[in-house]
Image 1 (cartoon, helix red, strand yellow):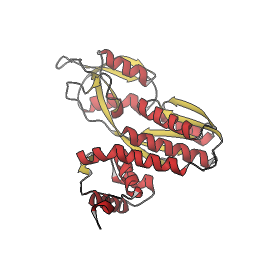
Image 2 (cartoon, one colour):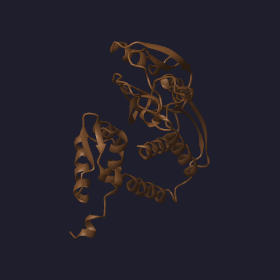
Image 3 (cartoon, rainbow, N blue to C red):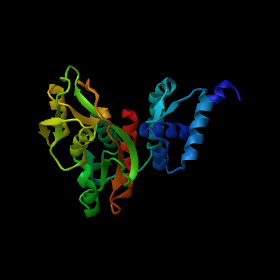
Image 4 (cartoon, rainbow, N blue to C red):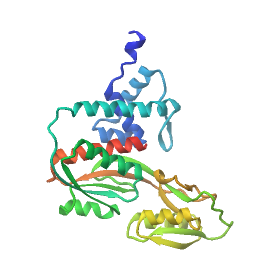
Length: 286
């Protein structure tokens, strides 16, 4: 086989590469692709052999892109996106109505990519989108109030796996905390694990805290953190635009697992298309 032939990459291998990059975990990637973990590992080795480069490092936190993997990522995303667009050239346009629940802790990039990408491909589908706390979404899927929802929590095993997300301590980039003083804490004022997680982590570590800000939304929480008078927790994707890790040794936090929940009676062609749009958006944001 000559060098040119070796560079003709299998798109299935690229899809597996993108899914591993989005999930950061081989087991989760295998579940999302409907394959065994060993099969995904074999595909990754084949791609690395074809390219002659190591694409991931296996660390305690999961699969982390190497420099070579980071170089491949945007090109692989474009290739898969272009192939998907080509396959849709002569497809029958989708029509109908879809009710969706999305987390308000999502990074803006994911929301924009998912919704804009879906609307561009399927302009005849009307969307009714709700952004908020995901703790109610399983019940709303069960009662038929929503057709599709993205749900997240530590240890989540519901629905179709989508991605994992680290939870990070965050504060303003210029914030300085006095030593040995209670941690000034900003929390969410709603019944979900996001409210309890920072208090539980600090208490377990024997650290004191004062609740100095409460908000019913992530946008309010992030605004308070950027204002520089409080510390809080956010998804890793939100660690930008003036937010950074506090200059203080703080306890570890759980990893969240996102999944797509689908109402069994919902139109399958519409929910499958939206789930694909969410997959693609998560890969772009990874």
